Image (cartoon, rainbow, N blue to C red; front, top):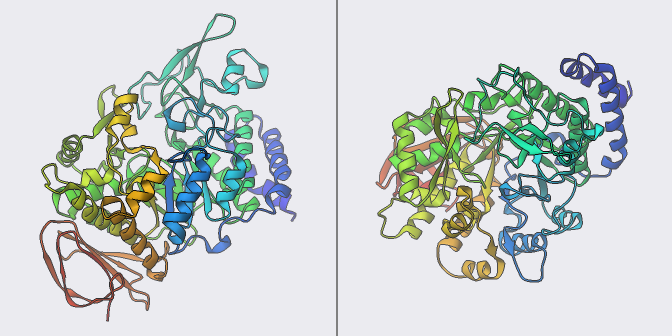
Length: 567
């Protein structure tokens, strides 16, 4: 069977479910599109083939313009910061949207196929790709109201018929789940003076596309394959759970959305072996894990959204009870799929993933801590019309620190490194936000100037001032040096493979104890004290891989941590 015939066979049932009235036509167009990209993808090196990620894999999450230097394009400056200060302890760089945009710091995309000229060019991306594996954002669910697609749709260009959705009076939206409190539908003036309505999950400048129109799926697939041709080794599917809409449903996690991801998985595995699809769905844990699919036929990696709020809860309470109970049910997924673990990102700390894991009182503690440290709280609308807390807008290191701590920077480093010791110990692939790696603080000025709560953790850093800060003792150098040391040890420790076993041991609620690769020659025990008390764990013995110190019975100082190779 030729590659083309095999591709057709794997895609056929998925296309038939999505477009039963036009299955043959859509399948032919999809296969033709794939074959047109095949020769352009063949020369591109993708991932690590069948081996997938391993213990040396670690992502850095950053914007293309997170660092600035006069006279340089931001992408060029980013490459210099990575080379000069971070080095090879990071294997992959996840660039948040690099495309022309009008809102949401990049996520209101005007043109998915172009690099924002304010950042640089595709040549700058290629230069970065020479030193690091590259993760690109695919904002598939929506597009800017200023995009050529939407402007053409408003102008009644037949090419874009059906690209956007006006639900109409007969469309039942009573069960729709959304992460915003703004109206679900907004009105837009057409060039002829009439008014059009369009579905807007995230706000008036982010217009949802409608993949129930086959041409939309083909355009989205063309964008995805274009990213692979540009050297992306991971593609992050942003807000993918909202992609398909159907009257009378929640319009999230619908079977059609899962089938589209399956189509893209087939294409990626066929045309760019080793490329990883990463789904971003900030939802309760039980819903989140469905994006691995049946038998691992969807995402290669799924964001572990429950981890950030549970780790924060552990440090706020000084107890690992909720974190350990959840982690005890998390293990390796398959030989080809794993978790994408993180603590901080460009967004806030989502609380929806804690449903069923934390109580309302627990969540109230996290809200209280966030506000006490100068953070903000974002709300979402529930299907019943009520509002609830959606996320905490805060710098993660800041949220770890007690409001009345006399030495907040010292505490931010101590607690921050302990929290990241948990991140780096758990099963999955770790991803570190650049502001956590570099010990940044809250950007209150950015919030005040923009009135955008998420800007609190999106400060753009002056590259030369950063270099000076990193060469002096303090919060920035403390976080970077500590994380670099941990990452260097982790990359040489097979027990931290994303596919190695994980077992949580309940010894003392103040300490998270994670046993990786249990029963093998590679076995390592990670122990992290989340409290401000000294804790003795007499049953743990061995040599700490981080310091070389031998422990015959373990005593952990407040916020201390070890990775023990047991004797």
